[in-house]
Image (cartoon, rainbow, N blue to C red):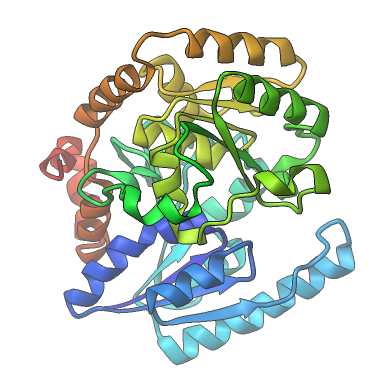
Length: 366
């Protein structure tokens, strides 16, 4: 079987990486199509997987001309790969690729974790052309429910499940300034199309967060998608990009304006607070907050609530142990997402028929 995977974000690469190894070991040919995004290409290069970067240029998505150029470039490169690679299954989130798949024998599987209301424009372009939507049970794709194959898990659990990831403190020791307990701050650019009018952590708030934790004896490390100004450079995390989950696993706390990293922290049982205007809107994070108590979302018009929650958590006896217990409760409910994904793709479309008639089949992948 030839499997073509379109990847647009580092977190998507992490989601697929373990399944790709399984598919390759089982004799399938896998090719990744990536674009220039943050550290994505470095992660793929380090993995040794076969890939093609089909979009080196970063386009200005506020310009209609730039969007047209981007679409035409993608269309050409996708068609070229369809002719050369001849995939049996295509996995991704690009509507252009989904529509091209309708013109050939390839089956298109949309792998998603954002509720359709959050990505509404993309959803209405993408999902009508997809053969299947592979997504967590908690996510809402109600207009296309007949296409959804839902699993009891999260995308981040595919690479942070205890069967897939074991944190190693020795790896990160050279990149820690001291032996103090530390917090991790993650800042994102909030420039994606669905981030329009979304705010996050600004510099005055960042100053207060840093000072609050330093006053409690914590060291502070910042991981940032955007360039940091001079006052914050001394806090910048210097570890290799593929060590970030090891860094996070041993952090006492995460404060961020990133959805992805807040979910990752929850998978590891690390207390986290996410400060941005998506708070209260995303089903995965809502479940992790209100069912499992593993993370907290606060909107940007409530900065004082952020510090109230920080103080509340810092005052909790045995904070780390409590969050590890909450993590174990979550893991007990969920499946090994990588094992399920690998089986689902290898056995598609029969696997879809099985899941539609017996949703509990997935619990064999614990």
